Length: 228
Image (cartoon, rainbow, N blue to C red):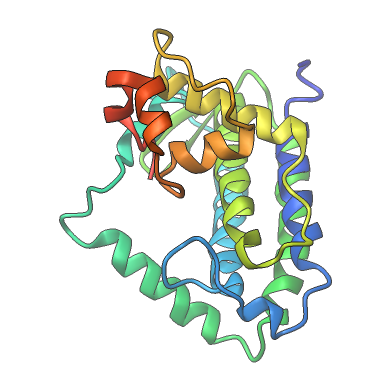
């Protein structure tokens, strides 16, 4: 991937979410998702906040060296550990914030304004530069990879009760799969029968491992989920 195309996976990831929500009515925006307690509108608001964070990060250049990359960044968010209740507080805040809109469709309109702006900022960013976000310094390509991974996983969350919705694009999904491969380590291989979507859902704890999965993975099964 050249410096001029580094933002293409993020563009595909955000466009994929737009294609899911653009034509939903207010009733469909209140369907459940894979994120416990969040409706489609709530989860879209969360992803909207991520796109807004992208805009801030891309306008916040930092001196190197980076302290995390596109894989180690996620190790600050271990699955199943929320002793201080931060995840629960954020989930509740997102629900209340989404409910403050006069109707769910207003969140879609704000998303369709914000997501393309984040993509344009990504395309204009110095691929050799560094930025800061969430207390870390990352290379610009690594930031874009983390944004893409989160968007792809949440895309899969969004479509739980939307059977006709499109799945994430191949380019964006490939970035998310590469992230999970990095968290899994070079010594482990996912079961060959898993599709990319199944891998992402099981790697993030959205789907449980089956008995056959446990058998094929062996001791590696104990590492799952790789990401919360």
